[in-house]
Length: 322
Image 1 (cartoon, one colour):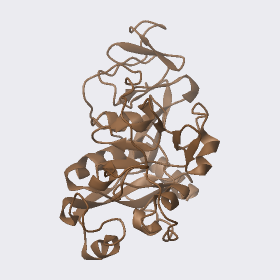
Image 2: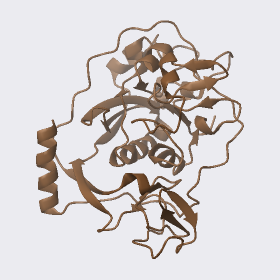
Image 3: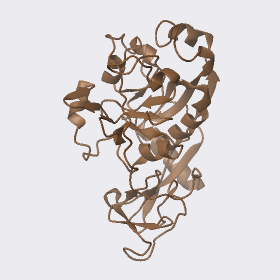
């Protein structure tokens, strides 16, 4: 895989390919104020073993992005853009790893981007990196997926019907550094937004351990979390309650649960997440704010459980912030 990617990089550099997503207006680079919402992943029975490993997508078009030559002195904007030292957004400058108000805080701007989403890495501040382009598509739930979900992640009495859901196929960067294809079920109303978010995660080189349907684990959140699986729809109640979780509507996603555990008092879920309670370690796949994951979701108005005050659900993102 590494030699094939090297070939792709050289081909891309020779062709001068590139591209970047467009973004909303500039926002302050720091994290948002923490909402007081309270929600959590539910406990579940022991689950079935997961399915076969994800297959890497076929090589095709490439995406090329500029990455800072010195990551330690670069900055993540609150909307997800990556800025090299000396680069400026509309109102802030990246200075030795932190944004400072004003555009002349640490000398002349090396490059300026008017929005926070795209980021700014000038020709002298980094190198172009190329990789297989993101591929994502949505479809109504096929018959075999409906059968697979019925009596597992979906059952009679759920707040949404199977017709209200969509199956997503998407490329993601694995923790192994390779490109993989994952599957996810979400509300049809947010399907396009979720594809846009995961494209940004992929192009920002934010890695995910696995992206599989929770039905691969018998719809057990415990089993899915323990396997570090990124998943969305699962018709279930919130932990310790009877009301439906946002996952029951297909409007919530949990990313890399091991690296981003649910924490309330002495409870850590999954238990392996206890190794990642130090949120400054910068471990691959860890969600930080500001950072690529919080920025990608925030740019579409989604909230993050890591900003809650009553508990921390670092893996959790939802359309309504709950």
